[in-house]
Image (cartoon, rainbow, N blue to C red; front, side):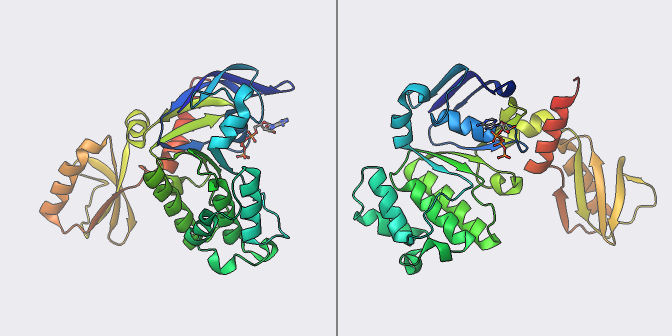
Amino acid sequence: MIQIKDLQKSFGSQVVINSISFEIQKGEIVGLLGPNGSGKTTLIRLMNGIIRPDGGTIVVNGLTPGEEGDRIRAMSGVLTEEAGLYEDMTGLENLQFFSSLHGLDPQDASIEDLLESFGLTPHRDKKVRGYSTGMKKRLSLARALLHRPSLLYLDEPTNGLDPEGIRFVLDSIVKLNRREGTTILISSHILYQLESVCDRYLFIENGVLIEQGRKAELEERHLGEVRLRVETPLSPRESSFAGYPFQRTGDRELLFTLPDKSRIPELLKSILKEADLYTAHIENRNLESLYFTIRRDSHEGE
Ligand SMILES: Nc1ncnc2c1ncn2[C@@H]1O[C@H](COP(=O)(O)OP(=O)(O)OP(=O)(O)O)[C@@H](O)[C@H]1O
């Protein structure tokens, strides 16, 4: 769906995208991760043909954004951090207006369906000015989907939402992907949220793609040591048990450090021989730990 090769973009003397190459397959949900100012928004703007690259190639569904930006934007939806809605119009009027900008019939029943699926039917005739952050975000998402895009760019889609709103937006994203096969690129700082949604991740820093892959592949490459938190009344006298060092982190809680995951069964069996065992949880195998490890690894040798 997307092929990017040796992409280059500078603003003045500042190199913002530095020789980036990657591909995204049709129907994938990909997380774009990187600190503030790393170039995520610029990358999305390049892919959507809003700005032109200085070098390299971008092909989106067989089209070149620099030359065929209109055709690319006709098949892609964008949710930016700024809601991009008209505050003095109602929710319904906003969707009707943007629908006509896409050359669609503003009276089409699909607008009512979108309002319904984003829980906005009861608010359709209220001015957007009076909407909560969550309602605005849902309306923006509905707006991005008006023309049934096959490619969706979501910039911080859950920013400012409460837990219920976050769940709703993430569920809607996954449902859309399953139902329509929409290819989705999500940039976010809230890493644990992406974990339940994305198939694959791109890590970008200072305009450089420092790593990419599925979570299991990234774990394989970057997470050696495993920290295992175990809930057990076991109370070893030494500072290690079964040959593995641990710290006591609570009344019935030990935090073991193991060289890799393959040692877990052996450790748990040893614990069970001497005491009960209620829970065992790997601490550092989440996206956030991976993110920091990958960034640290990329700085090594600099
Ligand atoms: N139109 C522009 N003119 C000049 N500099 C720009 C322009 N757009 C972006 N930049 C600069 O390029 C760098 C990357 O910005 P970009 O918005 O792509 O980062 P980002 O990863 O999306 O950041 P954030 O997570 O804060 O949204 C920043 O230093 C920014 O100041």
